[in-house]
Length: 119
Image (cartoon, rainbow, N blue to C red):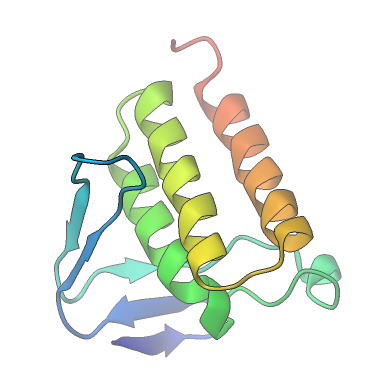
């Protein structure tokens, strides 16, 4: 489903469609076309030995969908949804709580910094 583009990006080789919901009777569907390129989980290289590398199998799906949200977010609240979906998908992938909590905190801080003053 994913192929490397270069050392810093990955590409979807086929359309990705996933249902995301933990609320009864609510369907949240994400569809990403084949060919979409993303940069993986944005983890500083100094933290790779602790958190993991950007394209680890446990992270890559969550990172792809999170980047899709971020690329299309037009406001802070849309970005917040992407961050929440990222956290949920990391949990589904079996990423330990402490690791996904660190990753989630990092994307929340970055999102807040990017969107502050635009709410």
